Figure 1: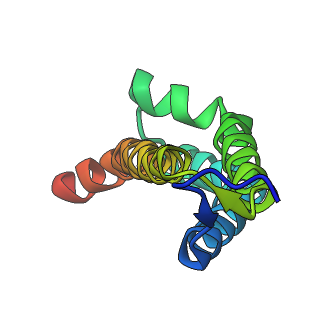
Figure 2 (figure 1 turned 180 degrees about the vertical axis):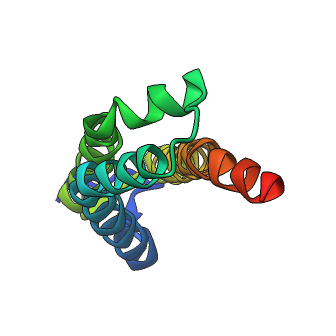
Length: 125
């Protein structure tokens, strides 16, 4: 066995977090087209003027596939390495953190712009 001094087993928590993250993001990406169509139907049904940013979110239901691809690639990277160096474990942790932050920001951005016309409509009524 050709072990370097700082090489050790990959933390199982890293693998579990990567798997859960990939599963959730892939599920959201699969549901996005029908969800966007539902929001579009509700907004058009009420005759709401759709702001440009909301229109952008509604017109890109498959953009979530980019996050899904990144999460699956990250999971594959973590799963493929049963033994890692300390530096590689650190890179894996940073990559997971970065993906979580990007996903939360992207979903928050989309949720804000999808619900804003509905809240605005509620203020008028």
